[in-house]
Length: 504
Image (tube, rainbow, N blue to C red):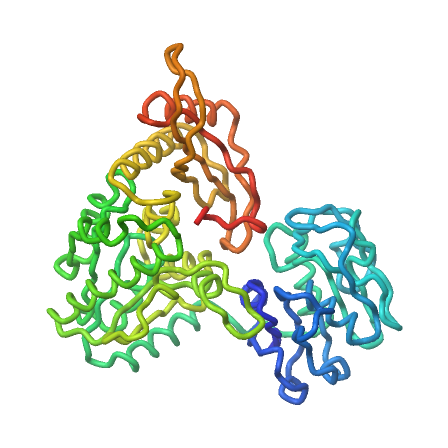
């Protein structure tokens, strides 16, 4: 087992799942864990964290961990912590590094077959400026002199970048070196074992009681529904809420597809009027999510009462959890997801969330094992609150209509060209900021549409999509010419981090 120490970073679970991807069991521990509890681990990885090591109250680690006869790898905050606790010096760097950075990795056991100049993923402003005694520098970048360090004798390694992120060119190789060459770990983990154990747990939890599933048509809720359906059969009823916040033609398509898949076990609730009334005058995205989350639960509870259900199945995945909630005192809240932080404090239904510990690409792998159709597996991610969080400001029927039309144009043009291999999602955002334009030789003062398109594999990090200029030009021209009230289109070229996938 590889122990991953969680300091509140969004990447702690990402590190653990990367270890699992390589076939090795991983377990996450709090930074408060004592060294004795980790003595049987084959290796220890210290994750990043949202804080600054030199500020009062910064979370620390039991220093005895460094003296265990176990290899330790510190990543980002983990490297800084290791440097600080073992006698080095950490301070704010002269420059910050976020996103892709070109670095030079020198020869060491950790970088065997992964050295030289390459691109890695960084997210930091602090750095180790003085190495602890016994350590040597094994990497550098333009802005970070001590990008990596090692004390081979004690088996202690530190890297300022994130090898667990897919955008780090040789990150997988670096992790393999640590797991197999340095720790001597053996492969003992697979998706089939996870799925069977989860199905058994659902059967034990639900027994012969009935459950309903909040089905949106996306891969998360569909996979969760398919898992629970396999576990408890016809005791599951799927509920699709037509909230009036879906994309153009999507509600009808979802109802058609899933009637065929779930048959009479799919219930459709039409609730556009209720959702728009509840959102009237609301501009804050956090309030939107909480309003939508509470309304969903009220509607689900009403449907559950009709069929006598005791459980609510949700397609919550791990990125929803870590962005929504403070996992412990060291963690930071990014945004509230409607199905996590948006839930009311008191609920009659008990939750079943079989995918809660998985990332999106892991969910896709489970979906394939369950035999779900490719159309579901390839469906672009869509936020649970729908277009409500793709409209800046108040949600109105007029803004929904304009945004749907712009989304429809983007989708039509995307179908005409070859999509990038790692395209994760491409969508439009309605921005109610008026700018001056010229239409028909007359001045126009209208609003704008922003296009956001990103490439990713797990949604924890992302690059903006390099669409051909001609494609973007066609989309822009059509939106400005065909969507009333819009005279400007902008393209978002921000990576994640520092930006998130969605604007709100």
